[in-house]
Amino acid sequence: MTVFAISDLHLSFANPKPMDVFGPQWKDHPQRIAENWDKIVSEDDVVLVAGDTSWAMRLTDAMPDLEYLAARPGKKLLIRGNHDYWWSRQATTRIQRMIDSSIILLQGTSTVMNGVGVAGTRGWRLEDYELEGPKQQDEKIYHRELAYLRRALESLPEDVAVKVVMLHYPPFDLNLQPNDFRYILEEFNVDILVYGHIHRGTGSYLQGNVGGINYHLASVDYTGFTPIEIVKCQDSV
Image (cartoon, rainbow, N blue to C red):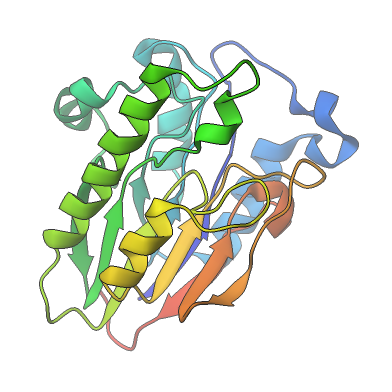
C-alpha cells in the first residue's frame, strides 16, 4: 500500500467553472489529474484529498465530482475545504451513506489503514478573514476546528506505525509563523502533515521537515496535477 496526497481539485462537472481563468496551467485540469492519478495509483493504495474538492454549493451538484473521484483507483480519504459548501459538517454521516464506498469522509475523525493512522479536519486561519477586522464567528470556528483536530488525534490507536494529519488550512499564518494547530501536531508527535489551500503565486508555504514533522503541500497546481507519494508500506490494505 502506498499513501498519496492531492488537494484543491476544484471540480465542477454539474456547473462547469473553468479554472484556466486562474492561469493556463489549469487548462483541462480534471482530465490531467485523472490521467496522472490512474497511472500511479492502484486499487490497494490510499489517496488523501485535502479539501476544496468541488465548487458545488449543493450535494446534488457535487455528486458528479464525487463520482469522478469514485472512478479513480484506490481508497479516497476526504476532508472539507473552505469552498466545499456542498458538505456541511452536520451532514457528514448522511453524505457518507450516499456516496461510493471507496470514499471516506473525515470530519474531526480518523482511520487506520495498514498501520498508517490518518486524522483529518478542515482547520482554519483567522488572518484569512481579518481584512475587515477579527470576527467573533471566525474565532468560534477556529476553536471548534482545534477541538476537532484534538479529537481526531485522540481517536488514533497508540500503536500506529505512522501518524498522518490532513488539514485544508496550513498550521501557520501568512508570515509562516506557527499557530495553535501546529502546537497540537507537535503535542501528539505527528509524523506527516498534508495540507492544501495555498496555490502557486498566492502565498508562502512550508515544505519538508518542520519541527520534526514532514510537511507536504498537496494543492494540485503545486504537485503538477498529480497525487504525490506520502508513505509507502510493504503490505496491501
